[in-house]
Length: 412
Image 1 (tube, rainbow, N blue to C red):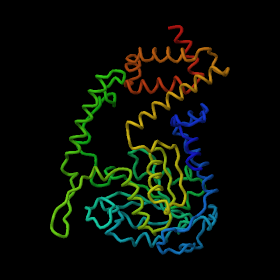
Image 2: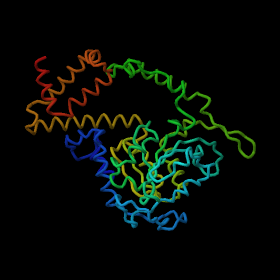
Image 3: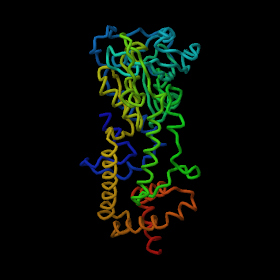
Image 4: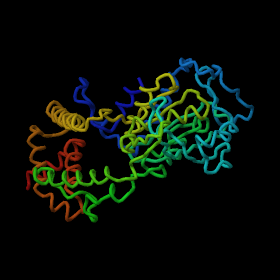
């Protein structure tokens, strides 16, 4: 139910395999407005979700730690049937510093926010002597303690969003009146932000774009231009891979040394494993997870790998979870074509567009914009990629604008 609702609320193009035509209004949901839909989606999930029994037999009592009496009158207390309160704040303060090191332990207070470093094994295979990495984690503590609804891990998209997601996604804008009843946890994914090692090194940050236009100078309609851009990216990636700091060594009991490459242990799966490590450190209770955009891939992966450790799951603005970039782009292209076909069919069978042959109009408008791409770039400081995006959005997202532009196209 969660996945279906979030897919309907998603601003992204639908999967072309879906037999249900998407109404044009769904596409108009801008990411900036998604918080409204996130709120209603979360409320729906909170209403229908049930607290499951710990199937892993980790030894925690089913009722969890008891609630204290310092409940806020302005916050609706959750039904204990569905929610297990988080551990008391003293438990967080006393986490083993060799496993998690707080930066400002004194800020572990009701309503406070503080961060620290998770000392994580590079990999997850048991009994392998992996080297350690540092993952930066921030926690926004519930105003009511112990947090009545437990702990919630959040990710607001990317890849690239950081642990400061706790401020937005832990607020009433996203969680409504239940915001003050969760301990909200967010992460600097491996290689990003304050986590160590870091991707922010010269070899991995080599410029592949024009500094003025902030994008790679590439004409996506010209094969040679695309191949040239691909070679630039390939060279950058090879130099990044060859950076010696990414080779992490560990010594086995027999004295032999084994090397691991950090870039092979810094993807979505490893982020899900780091979330699980934090879950175990903060009380080993079930965790609610909430992801937006790429965050849906992160939290979907976590729920797939650790299904018995999830309480509530919210996937908002779902992205394609396929790791094969070629397949992902193919699905994206086919879904955009499907969207255009549906838009044109809606015009042909309806009366709102005022055009008998919208397909011809769309093609003419597309040719006009492409033919004047340089003017768009010069006048609006747009890159070819951004001009292409504008063309796509204008042409098939808004019938009324398209109709006006059709008139302009016919007039030359």
